[in-house]
Length: 147
Length: 103
Image 1 (cartoon, rainbow over the protein chains, first blue to last red):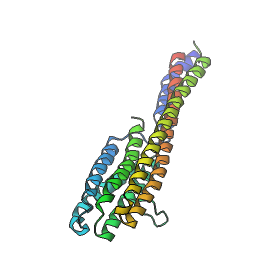
Image 2 (image 1 turned 180 degrees about the horizontal axis):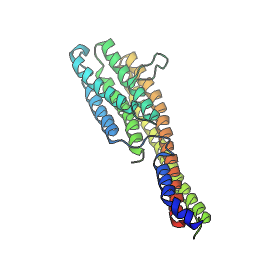
Image 3 (image 1 turned 90 degrees about the horizontal axis):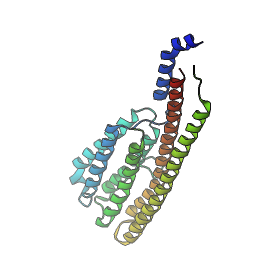
């Protein structure tokens, strides 16, 4: 019996080690690129909001650039396995859904900017606070994952 | 040849569970308090500016508040999964160490 255990020992330990690495995850591990994507997107989006008292048409290129940054972050996270919670966070920020009028806080604001031509100065600080909180939830979740 | 020390494994797993889930509970409580404070401040800010913003901007703010509540739930769901993963990984580490000691 002892001899048998000695023979299988390397295989048993390897199997247990492999199980510890891949066997029991319910959510993706921390990803430095995903974290950087989210923090960059937050900074760029909040900076853009400061321009929203100006005419929408004059800032179309700025809006496009920031929107692309956000979409890149979303697409990166969509490509990670076991990452549904972060994807749902990105969609809450980025995707306007016809069956969910609360969704897409960033894109909803851009649509409003376009519809109104410009945003009231008094509306900007509150929107920045709320958008920052939304990004913070995404960033906190990523940072809270196993490093 | 030593055997698995099942009694010690049980104790180690119990300690791990107690530590991880106590930490998680404390974090959920702290997050809940912070969330309530953030929502109160955001709602007050929105109401205070109501006379100076358009109806659509006000509506956007209300939608944001509802969305933030939902996102807090998503965040907590994700962090709960992280705690479960830490626990299961910890259990495997405990069993692995016991196996190495037994062989």
